[in-house]
Image 1 (cartoon, rainbow, N blue to C red):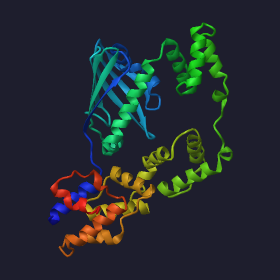
Image 2: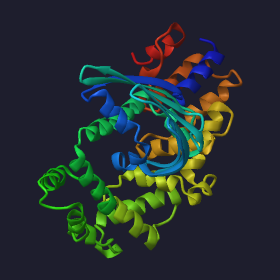
Image 3: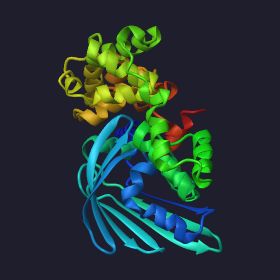
Image 4: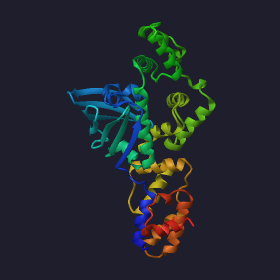
Length: 369
């Protein structure tokens, strides 16, 4: 393998592979007209996917086309997109992002009736920019899993009857969460039997202990929660958490937000962006990247490797960086370069198994032996 080929393949190994197109297909146990009506009911998306679609504002609507401003949330990152929905009843739903950080992304959903079931095929073309661009670098298996999860929510919702949908909708409005199974069964049964009205259910939830719960003060937060939030601030903002941040993120953490979600929020903050050249970890990432690829990484790439370091991946040591720096002067042999590659593989910084098995990359496969 030549020096140039080794450099090209190293670049491919270390940088995440960008995904632009993929397709999934599955048969769902719901009649064609029912699943289509649910998946084409754009205004109801926040009720079906409350954690991911925060709001839908219809901008224009004709018989078969809906243009809406939709606010999305994923891993603590929020973004607004203008989305065009073209609806061909019971056969196709085309979703096109026409403005925002995902402008150019197109999702085509095809519905094929099979007796009382439906074959649902989804073709995805991703064109992501800005804060959404990191999604393109997730493994395709992660994207497929996420899309299947979304489809499963639509399938589950499509099986609700009118009473269950009413209960779920009222839970969303008052408690800002989907109805749990126990509440869904209990209150839909009462509504169906006309033992309570929708207004009765609203009053029950408005007077519930869950609704009346107040945000915890700092001294009411668990000690481990405060340690976790302070640790996140120290790692990513190089300071202790201020009282407002400690209270805000502490309550988020104790109400179900994950470490990774809060980490992403801090990484995307304006304060974090001003620390890129001062933060020791981020500076080291930028130096290592520049030595390996002779260019400086953008913020998305730095964020990606900062998360890796926080998850336990080691920073690239000087001896590895020096090998690639010296290789440019032909002082270092391919064998020594292979030692450096082997180190990156053994430490989990690169994943050999994801490399296509062809002759050009055989040398990398042999590193596993």
